[in-house]
Image (cartoon, rainbow, N blue to C red; front, side, top):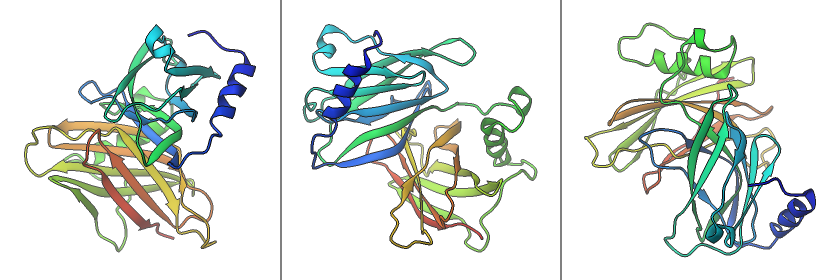
Length: 286
């Protein structure tokens, strides 16, 4: 895929202003890169541009086949982003694979796959693609203060038998639970650093050994409960770090910056399937 002139990009962005009855989504995080996980799903619609910002992947590129080239426009935007615009909606139930290649900051080649689908009720207009790690990095393997280091320490602190870690158990509210079928999500801890930086750790467990393991594909963290009561919830950019302990248990730490004036958080964790976990309006401690 060769870089296109900015005039072409402007034309594509103008197409995205076409009216749509679907709810437009911004700030969703697609979790890619798990060897055993299904590719994350991106919701697209005809003549609506979707901006993908990649975390941990430089110079993302897509080599379109002639067939896909007639159905999609894909443009690079800067060093870490792509714009995807379908010419027309995908058929009901159709799933189009979009292979993306690039390189890590260390210069190593990296490839991932996204799945494009069209839904009648919503469309992604801006997403962040996070290369969620299957194992947390050791503190000495990352720069001091890096988000991945703290996230890895938080994940390790929840291992059975682990000693006290740098986690903050929610005061006065116990443990926040949500369920979807046999899958249970538990908000384990929220660590607040530098006043506005948050590390949210969630454990996902299956009550029985599942026929199809639950795997995180889409995550959304929203800030709400504003001092200005008329203000809507705001989706936050997050960095996802994950550890899979087996077919029945996994943990995810989501690092984000908390906007000034927010009083609560809501989390949505989705698989490529019907089992979606919602943790709504957890009040932040003062």
